[in-house]
Image 1 (cartoon, rainbow, N blue to C red):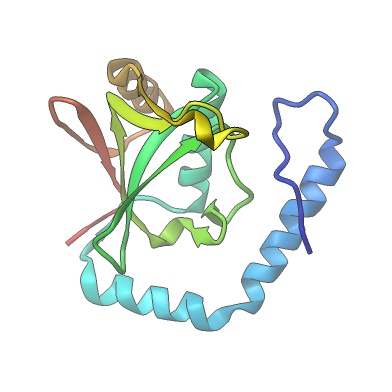
Image 2 (tube, rainbow, N blue to C red):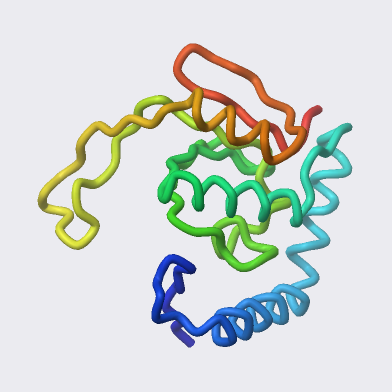
Length: 164
């Protein structure tokens, strides 16, 4: 089944349909207990402190995408060392950070001052270019949302979901 990602910014989206799609996603999540149990085991064995839950994750990403329309983040998952990047324009249906990745799979996220991304997703031949975002404004907005474990670097801010 293919479902187009709906954006709350689109005025034509029926809120009822969006809620029903989120319920379907939650239903699918509840049926995949094996992956969830494996993730829970990794968290218990690897980390001594947890700072975010699904509600706090959702509130964070929702508030940031409402304020900034788009926000670029880099993220690291709990079970590998790779750092990936993603341009958020909307929050996904809970419990998904970025479907199929659940919130609880994310160790930390970073907000870089500068990042490289595609000029046009509809025309990848156009190539990539450098973009920038105001990390001071992002940090200020995060602090308005609630208490988070943040680390400041010269060109980025890191927000922790877990610590060892």
